[in-house]
Image 1: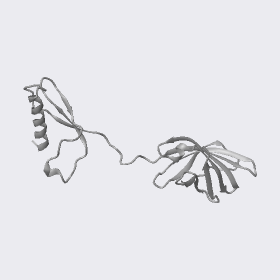
Image 2: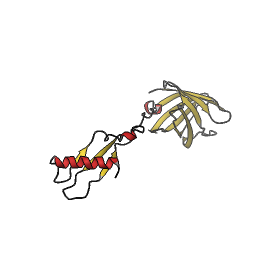
Image 3: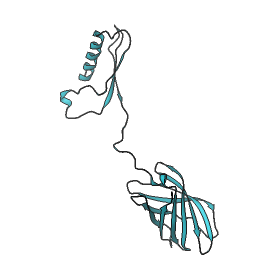
Image 4: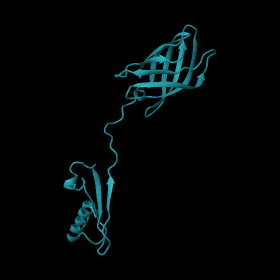
Length: 190
């Protein structure tokens, strides 16, 4: 029997001697039992020990260790698309400078779904399609790939975009990843 089990049995015996016998009793320790002096070099994670006192004549009690649960060392970074639901600006592509509104539809953790809503002012052409991407909080980057048209104008194709969010969340800028296309610049509106 290990040192911890002996300590548990001693604790149960002490509780029985104090009149805590009769039926099962539960004791919750706020911190783990003190470690064996030989174990000081390797501290243990915090845990809760539940010691069950069995009725007289029952076999020795079982010591059960329950972890308090995982606690993250830091909380996940906020997804800037959660707060700013519409980003407005423009992008350059083969048709020329085109107005763009990126309308956020759904944010689940790091995954973002949006509507790529564009308008080419010189020709009056408008269109929109669904896009989705995964925000990377470490780099503040995201790549959006298209999935399906909502309104498809003639001679237009869906394009991907990848860019970075400014550290103050005031700008989402990057490039349209299609030959002949260039940069985009979007600012949050709300």
